[in-house]
Every structure is written in structure tokens, then in C-alpha cells.
Image 1 (cartoon, one colour):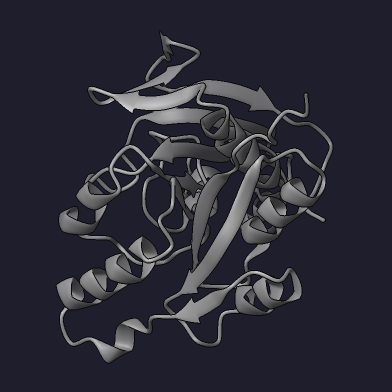
Image 2 (cartoon, one colour):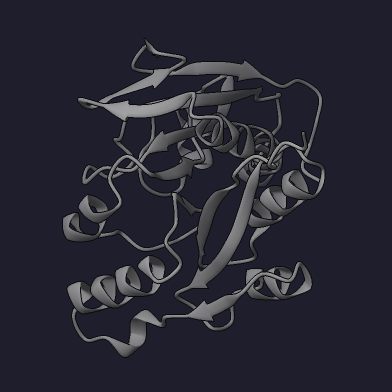
Length: 226
């Protein structure tokens, strides 16, 4: 008896820029490390370089330009309608540079992930690498978390840490952190695809166990972004 192939998780990816994390998802899919169908890529910027990556990979892409909507909630509603058309099981924010309204977040609650370029709860918001340098930190990193209405404050899933070397500037740190982003983000999504990962009562569950508030931590040494 021939078994049916496993059902693939339907993922919609939201981008604003070059799409390097999108490329990490494409590569993980192609390498059979991510059991998912990337059903659509949506950008709020028509000039986003990630749209070309999507086209090259044969993924449907579209633009919902936030500048076409005078009110933020109007954009969020248009974006939510576009995302819902693809019936996603999971929504991935991959360098999506818009703060989403509670209305949007609630519609996809528990099935939307983001990655932030710091070891949360340190340095939510912008300029994370320079802030780490200014504080004299010896490590920087990135954190995958569920998206909630609190900016960069949803339940954490996994963090990746890299060492800050003497003489590093913000660009050096960014290159190291980007490399670990490309490792941990598709990995966390695969946990979701395997139904190992969920958000319940404001906490992250992995394999049925509640994770610590800082999630899991992976350290990566001696590598820089490709």
C-alpha cells in the first residue's frame, strides 16, 4: 500500500526588504529541511528585493503598498484580506518593517512568527546591534518569537547567540547575527510544521512542555553571513 505524502504546512511570508530570511526558507524547503509549501510572498514595498527571490523560486508574490492607505488600520485590513486568500497555516514575518495592529495580530494569533535581531528581552525595536555595542555586551543574537500585540514581546521560541569580538562595529555584528537568523528561523518553523510547537495561554510549548520565557538558546561561533 502506497502511503499518502505528508501534508505540507502552508506558509505566507511577509517582507519589506532584500528577503535574506525568505531565501533561508526557500533553501530549507529545497533541501527538504522544511516540510512546507511557500504559497505566497507579500511585500508592503514594490521595490523590495525579496520579490525577485520569490519570482526566481516560483512563488506567487504581490504587493500591498502601505503608502496607498492613509490610515494604518486600512492597510492592515487589506493585508489581512490578502494573506487570508492563501489560507495559510503559518505566517512568517521576514524583515517586515511594519508594526501590525491588534486586529491583524488577533486574526493570525498563534500562527504568526517573527525574528528580531537581538537576544530578547534586550533591545526591542530598532538599532539593536549598536545598542548592544554601546552597552558593552559580549554577545549579540536573534530571537524567534510568536507575534502578539506587544512589539517584539510575544512568547519566545528560540534564540541564537554569537560573540561580539573586540573591534566589531554594528555592521560586523549584523553580519554574524544574520547568519544565525538563517539557521534558527526555518528550524523554528519546521517545529511548527511538525506540530511540535504552539502558543497556549501566552506561553510557548515545544513537544508539550512549556519553554522558559527566553525560549531555547543556540550558540554559533566563528561564522559570518553568506
